[in-house]
Every structure is written in structure tokens, then in C-alpha cells.
Image: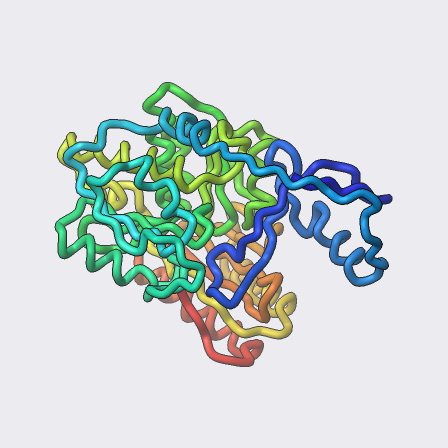
Length: 378
């Protein structure tokens, strides 16, 4: 733990050295306040940046104290409440040579089939970002070759986990928010849940059918964890594979999510439903996935999309935080600017592929005057 004590700050904080899912050449810091409250650009990082750029560095008068803590036993005891009997469930796991390697054998034993489960910050097998299709290729092959019921893959610092079904198909991560809802409702729990502004409407409808009130908020842990705490939500998640839990300081845990979801898959298999069938029963919309456009005039491009589509059809819902999410009777779209790259990110969903394709084509036509480089998609 470290302490910041300045004219602007006076609170306890923890700092994790991590580059998250980025390649080996990257590094960074993840900063949290007491009770795992995230520190984002709007809640302290911007002030730290200003201090770093304008303030003189003054050595501390008294050296700090280094203390080594090991809470592995306590952490494993906490996680054990989410463990169920997984015997008979054939599991494939790709740890991406990241931090997921550290405790996964303690949690799940030797029955799963593991790959890349030795921590190695050079990431010799693939980059630790499961959202990039090429990084999941080994897991897909492992699932198919071994006829597994499910595959899971951690990102570099193991705060995110993503899944592959028994057919070797990557599952859009927000779909697992719905699976989590099934777990909590099965325990007789209801209350608030959270999703980000990109989350499929299929998920929203499914979660609310289980008795929860879904709240939509901005993308990123720095916003989601605070929002879940504000509404005293039980759980939530994001398109990027973060899953948040009230009983984990309203923060994200890939291990908790993995244990819950594995238990749910085992339960559904016992009832004759495979993972792919479960996800198909949740999914009611067709989606484009997130498409990235290299755009310099982001605000103008976003407004062009908004104005054109609203002129055609009256929205049933309009959200203007983190870009726009505009919902119509049979389809919706989200467009938002990247805060760190020169990209405008677009995605859409519709009740059928014909409608989806027509809206995608129109969006491309509207954005064409603003695009400066090629189009990238996930």
C-alpha cells in the first residue's frame, strides 16, 4: 500500500504494476483507493498527470517501509464459496502465460486441459488479449481436438476471462452477464445489475426476465465499479469481458466469474443443454461487433450518424454518455470515441440480419466523408 498526501490528495491507495492485456513491450499502473475504489482519469489520474508534468519531485524525508504480504490462503478460501462439483465437465483453459496461471490449478485441480499456464511476461505463445481473434485460435483448437464442453481464456493480468463453446465458437463476452443472472436468480436473489453502453439488448432482456433491474453505464472499470457501488448492484459486466460482483468490493474478478459460469454450464449440461444451445437461447439479436473507424473529426461524425438515423425513425431510447446509444423499435446502435486512439467505435444490433446489414451499409455511407484510414473490426 502507498499513501498520497498532497494539497489535492490524502488517502490510502494500492498500485498494481500491469499492462493489462497489452503486448510484452508495454507497462503501466492500475491504481485503486481503499475498498478497491478505482482511480480513473475523472477521479484522480488527471490530477496525477498534472502533478507529474508541473511539480518538482521532492524526495520523502522518511524512507518508506517495504512489507511482504501473502493472502493466497485467504483468497482461495473466499473463492471456494463459488466452487461446485465440476466432475464430468470437460474444460480447456488458456492462461495466456499471464497471471491467471498463478492460482488456476489450486482452484480447478488437474482435470482441466491447460495450455500456456506458466507465467511469462514475454508472452511467447500469443499476446494476452482474448478479444483479438488470433489469440484464441489455440484454445478453439484445444476445445475441438479434445471434445471439451467449454474453453476459457484469461487476459494478461487475469481481470478478464472469456469463453469458447463446445463447437469452438468464441462467445461474445457480454452474453455471460446473462449466465451470471441465471446463477444469482437460482439462489433467489434479485436487485440491480450493470452493463456497459455496448452490451447486447439480448442480455438486457434476459437479465430483466430473471427479476433484476439492469442499469447501463460507461465503458471501463473506473466507471463500472463505482456505478455498481452507487446502485448497490449485485453483479454486472462489460462487452470486454470484465465481470463485477458486490461481494468482491463491487470490483471485477475473472476467477469468480469463471467459477460461477463453469458451475452454470455443468448444471445446464445435466439438463441436456450445451453451452452453445444456452447462448443461442439468450441471443435474440444479430450484431455487427465493434467496428473501428480512423476518424479525426469524431464529434462531427457522431452527430452525423445521430441526425441521419433520428430523421428516419423516432428513437425509443437515447443515451448520450460515452458517445451515443440510440435504440429504435427493432434495432439500435452505439457510436463512441476512443479516449486513447484516433478511432470512432461503432456497433449495431437488429432483430434480423437483413435489417442489420441495411443499417450497417447506411452507417458506412454516413461516416465515409470522415474516415481517414481503413476500417478495423473485432
